[in-house]
Length: 144
Image (cartoon, rainbow, N blue to C red; front, side, top):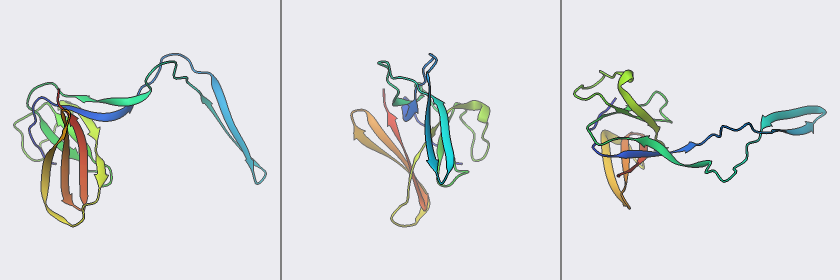
């Protein structure tokens, strides 16, 4: 696990919003090779709501430790911990402020040494990029 200290950031990630009203039943059916396949589900309506869009982890001004969960090498998660002052593997999940999925890519060549990079994207947006070995993971940050 790796750490870095950040101040006054809000991490952005896409999330889905769910409604509280009961949704009407719907179904989809098909017959293939004499076999029937059917799906029965609830079909919510938009009704003027924003269903998909900006959500994320809001990080108040302060100092935090960042960890990267790499259990699945193809799907890293950035962990923002409220606990500071620790080093290495002394990670306490109970101190998580939250987690954000990172966007994964492959570097053009082997990245020998772990590298963190912060890039100004304009309009108070920053990209955090971690690169190591055959992996590049990014997450957008919105500064408020």
